[in-house]
Image 1 (tube, rainbow, N blue to C red):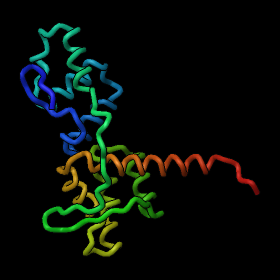
Image 2 (cartoon, rainbow, N blue to C red; image 1 turned 135 degrees about the vertical axis):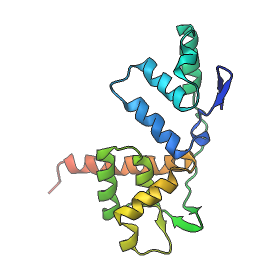
Image 3 (tube, one colour; image 1 turned 45 degrees about the vertical axis):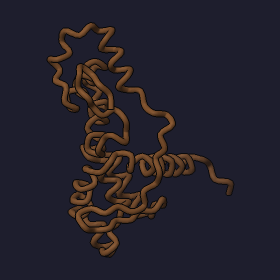
Image 4 (tube, rainbow, N blue to C red; image 1 turned 45 degrees about the horizontal axis):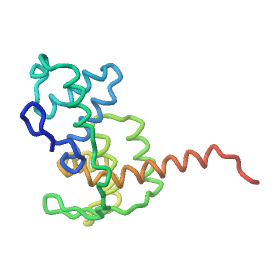
Length: 179
């Protein structure tokens, strides 16, 4: 947590929910906003209205932003392979099936609001359901809604794994074969 204008707000990944992480990412990826607007919107989302910054010296604001953006570089994000939500157990592995990859790539290309939790919803499978039930659109959407409330640190190892896998597949597909 960090204190800005006498308010404590989360600034470390393990202090945010996945929903908050997604919202902050959406704001930061908005190409229509300049850097000051992006930070004002992030701070407003976290509970400090923009109007409270209006009389703040710009140098002080820049320092607040710098402090807010400072991440704990030694933070470890262990892989969580099992979660329990509303009495149901969900398990994930650090592997992607063809079906998982197809769905995750579709989600990533759309980059709609909540895409991180949707990707996790594909990876975390409810242990008492069949694959048919797991892969239905409605189930993935419902599970993503539940996953959004979890700690954002859970998502980091999976997002890095997905990015590395997809990047590796893209690299392999453009390299010439040795045949």
